[in-house]
Length: 106
Image (cartoon, rainbow, N blue to C red):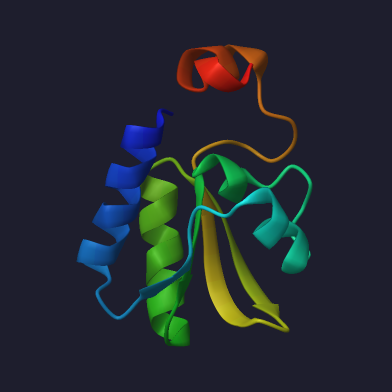
């Protein structure tokens, strides 16, 4: 999934579930460390988004994310209930994706 496709998918979630609000999108590497983010966090690539809202809205958002082909998790952690979505699977980012979308960083 391209960054543009991911952005469009996140906007579609918000349009379909307007009770959700964005709590975290793109993060710098230092910000990611400060929030104890994973070293493989897709937030630093702009390929992850967190949403907050009422429990039913979070569940609805997760259903929409699944339909849109996004990887997602519902979290109940110290930062509060939230829906985490990302346009790349967990783990290391494939070299092919980096080459196509992040040419200047390869």
